[in-house]
Every structure is written in C-alpha cells, then in structure tokens.
Image (cartoon, rainbow, N blue to C red; front, side):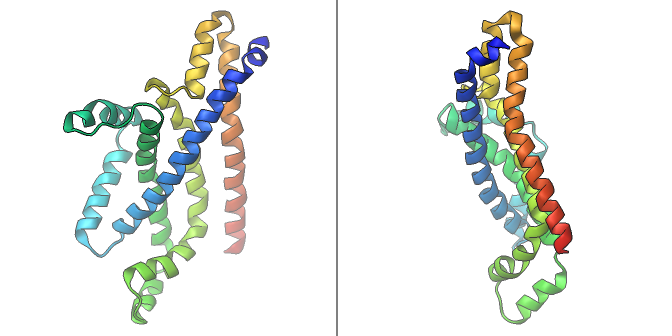
Length: 216
C-alpha cells in the first residue's frame, strides 16, 4: 500500500479535477436540462421537436462519441472549443442534460393535469404555470433520480482522461504505468476516491427518497 501513500498528492490532484468536472458540468446540466424539459412540455411544436431531437440523440449516443464530435468535427465547421478542461465540461454537461431533462419531464408528467388547467383558468401563462404550480409539486419526485444522474456524471468524467484532462482515471493510468508491479493497488486507490464521491451521493438520494415517500 506504499504506492498509495507515496502518491497521495497525485491522487488528490486527480480527485480535485474530477470533483471540479462533476460540480461544474452538473450545475450546467441541471440548468440546461430544466430548459430542455420546459421545451419538451411547451405548447409550441417547434420547441418540442427541437428539444426531443436533442435529447434523443444525446441519450442514444456514447459519451466518447460526443467528445470525438466536439474535438474533431466541430472545428471543421469553424467552431473551435478549447481542448482540455472546458471542452470536457461542455461535453459532460450536454450529455448529462439529456438525462436531467427526462427526469424533470417525468416529474412534470406526474403532476395532475387538473393543476395546470386550474392555473390556466385563473389566467396564468405557461411559464407561470410551470414555475409556480407544476415544478414545485414535481420537485419531490425529481430529486432522487437527479442525484442518480449526477452520480453517473461523476463516473462519466473518466472519459475526459482520453481528451487531455488529467483527472482521477488519467492519474491512475499514469501511476499504473510508473508502478507496473503495483498496478492493482493503484487502481484500488482510484476506485476508493470515486467512492468518496458516489457513496455519499447515493446515501443522500436514499434519504431524500424516504422523505419524499413520507411526505406523500
């Protein structure tokens, strides 16, 4: 286990990068996904079609392919994303936003139709109905699956290791190559640091889910 303690600073640097990717991409994905969900339930057909197309394409495309498209295809159209950290944030946020959208949309659909009809009957607009009536009721059932989406995001950050981002997986790969006789111990260390993120998040999802069931 000496390889773990001797390389703790390297692990910490990779862990911090993974955490930053998770937080920034997660925040962007939540906002992006919320907008997509609003578009998917919008009364305007063009918005529904555009949001549905985006969500279905991203949900059914491997994350690695999203990275390849952003890094190698977009520059051919004059779009030059900065290679490295911010490209990873953009790709992870775009990919995760599709799953956030579906989680939020399922929560919106769980609210009785009569709630929206009553809101429209008293003169509220679509945006006011969604923001003031529907979403506050939907949020209880949405939070647990959203936490699970963010847990998946934390693990998906490992894809960024192949695109010039030295996060936890890239750090583990570099340490394994430098210590071929202790590669298993190195990978165990990587797994432990991932668990530091995912286990507390999973416990939080369980607590929220129990409170939601109790509130109902």
